[in-house]
Length: 88
Image (cartoon, rainbow, N blue to C red; front, side, top):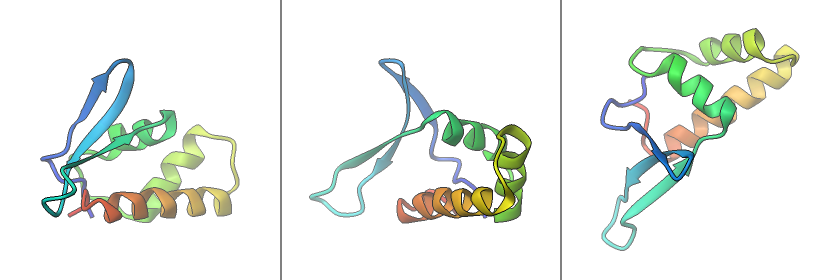
């Protein structure tokens, strides 16, 4: 999987956000605010193919968590990107 290149992180009023165009006429835009961890993952994975194991490895490298927690968090992060059609 890969983060689609049409999505970029923007700094808006000190917040790091991704603006996602809506899928239907009533849903114009969704704004996804990135916390420190999400931004770290985005910065390290943007522009390259990756798998869930790559996300887990990054979390284990940076944070003091066990592998089960990292896998759960990686899965949740990937699922959020999928829900918003950010992954290709």
